[in-house]
Amino acid sequence: MEQLMHLLQNSGSPYQVVENCVERLKEAGFEEMDWHNVLCPVMGGKYYMKPYNTMLIAFTVGTKKSYFQNIRLGTAHTDQPCIKVKPSPDMKEHGYLRANVEIYGGPILSSWMDRPLNLAGKIICKSDKIFEPRVIVYDSKRPVAVVPNLAIHMQRDVNKGMELNRQKDMIPILATLSEKWNKDDCFLHFLAEEVGIDKDDIIDFGLYFYNADEPELIGFDNEFISSPRLDNLTSVSALVDGLINGYREDGMNMIVLYDNEEIGSRSKQGADSNLIELVLKSLLKGLGQTENQYLQTIAHSMYLSVDAGHAVHPNVPEKCDPTSKPVLGKGILIKTHANQLYVSDSEMSGAIRQMLDKWNVPRQNGISRSDIPGGRTLGPILSTVLPMKGADIGMPMLAMHSARELAATADYEGLKTCICAFFTEH
Image (cartoon, rainbow, N blue to C red):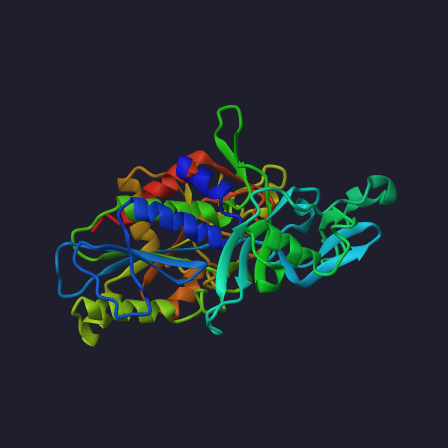
């Protein structure tokens, strides 16, 4: 739980997620591999690579050489719904400096009102090489903005339900206008001051406002965890933990942490690319495998798509499937869907059930109401690139995509055990 709390507290954007995971892997003896070069791992090796700053691949190679290297692959995503800063963001009017923003992903907008917001992401600076600008990974580490609500006296019907306009209502306040904050390029001046560079050296940025609330254990017995970014940092943390602690004598254990899942995965660093296929082919070639052996490896391999699922809401239980109502703390979810929003089929689901029973991990069915479909995960996207057997699993949660979500500590411990088992069992 300590590792998860650290990740939640210190990962305001996908850039920090990857940095924190890399530090944990390095402490466990993983070596960096440059994915631009020929990938030649050694038997018994432990490696990680960062194809992009918001994406991470890490893997271990067994000590026993086999005709084909069956792969156990676990995937999750590093991004979360949030508020992204637009270029030229300064908005100065009515006595305030505000930032022009756009909404990333599908957050519950009302949950972001009146929250302390930190700023994180990357700042792009001039360099001597035109096509290799300098990148500064940045986190304000303190609240610098807020999106204020309109007082109830000015919207008497607000508790009957009000639609928030993404361009008008979600603009955060940064400062009051003053001599310091009423000039050109205020936002760039702030960034330059924060990282100790000249404003004119900044040529671009990719920055996000994120909820600065601390994660908390709550409940009579501290059985719940309430925190921003539980979706999907619980999965990220469990995968890193499982990769470090799981072991198979032969085969390859691997995790891939993708970006851009919340907006459809259609990017070079998202699951809807063939990057992982290229990496696997190169790795297996580096281990001396032929093309035919690669095909056999894929045929004998399997993966887990690890992402949050929905628990039954006690105030609105009718939103759940009539016969499958997952409860927080009662087990992780094996998620299935007739139309392949989740990749699990009956054979792979059965295998995961057997594994969980052997390792004493409680499990529940993750099934949506037929008239309320859930969101698609990485699972079915990845299956179009790597035709392996796969299953969708994850922790049940309440308030998914809120600025603050709710899950159970017992389910997180179960998820960690599940991933470790997946990377250990034959």
